[in-house]
Length: 314
Image (tube, rainbow, N blue to C red):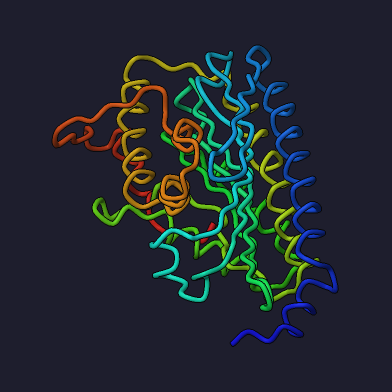
């Protein structure tokens, strides 16, 4: 049984409606800021907005960029969905959510660059709250960001993780290590026995710091994405490449598809709650390929990628 007084303390004296509006305002501004920053880094492409309404409740605004100078395809999406009943998969995992109204909102993005030397990147931040008359709300924050290079550079990976470590530092000495490990464990393709990339941060079910501190951490992660990613884009976008590198990029993009369709909880939740399919599957690359029993040339740059696809203390 959840103690209503304890939960009210966790919400720092605010009611559910107040925190929902506060988080929503931040997420909308975050979407704007990320899109503007990525457009400047691309120099050509622009995000096109597609607003949508969910029949069961809520909606969102999807923004997609295609065929830019740097970004082949990417999306930065905001969604806010609500309903009177959680999907069965969620209540099986969290039985205390049964019989509660819910609201879920977040910003989620995936960027697939043209140049194989620029990594694919993903980030999301989200807020969930479930209410039932006469009982205290159940709520939490989640999110993170991760990097999927095809031709990794150690300087880029170290920069990515140092940015993550610095944004975590004000919240505790153990925060980066905890959420870095969670990212390594979550973005793992069990059937391939490899990580999806070189990791980053992943957190979920965050509410034990109270509302304000938990919200501040979610904002630090959301704001930290462009600090982590854009310098890598700027450094690598002029690197020359050929057909070999492009073919390998498309092959490795297949792994990205495999993870999103087999393991990703956000994809599953979105589809099961009747979210907009086009927006949910925005994370897919525009082009990808699979090759039966592909084996890279021993000693090649392509073969060396395997060494990076395991949890590492950067």
